[in-house]
Length: 323
Image (tube, rainbow, N blue to C red; front, side):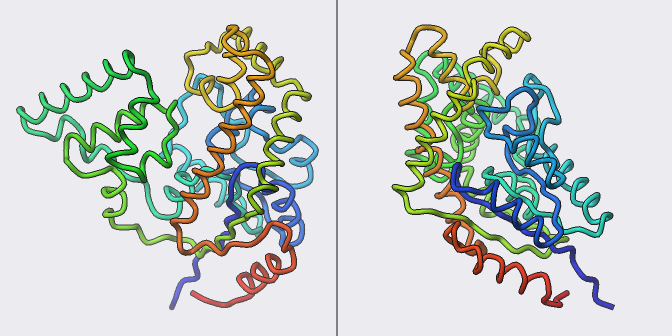
């Protein structure tokens, strides 16, 4: 007898497009519970800078994978896939529909298509000569990172592997170095290794909805969000994190928003410059998110205001009887 795959709804799109409010409306209408797909909202105490759903919003609908670890913990793609799988099973046990919403494209891909095993290029699996060459490459990259800065290496990655550069933030130095290491060790871009990997057979039947807005409108919302974060106390949030012992060297503290406030606190930028640069960098981040999601042909794109069309797609998906 055929087995029916569990149905999931994906709601993705760039930052500030309006995913949170629409996800709540979808969840209330179609008996969903929400799984966050955001690499920063998993961290406790980092609320304003990550634009988490408010406590009131979380009271309306159960949310998973928000506020689950400390800012100095290392949250990986593999850990997300495990945690998300557990959340999905819990939601299904409630006889509700899992609604995955967020903007971290790599997490969506890891959960739905399989985790890229970058350790297939591990130093230990190479011959003696190759091991020394790879170690030398890694050492050279780390020296250059400290000497020239991450932006220089990120531009270099853009020249040899633009797809990976589009999805790796310049401040994500671990993955930045790993991508360059893989390219220089194999001669093949990391993105091509990803594309060449055989996708696993997914246990899920998935409807992927992408949300968009006119660019000018999205950028205006980003400007508004930056001002709102400032008004809500982003500066105080960063000061509190520092007082709690979470240092500026942490990966989380070098993420968008938090590193900007650190530059203000160090006297590098004025407050006006801080907000301007934060808005600019958030626009750039939104563009990278669009680039990532646009590469997925399974995503059905809707203007975020086209609620009737979005609801109709979901209704058809949930009522369609397919194995």
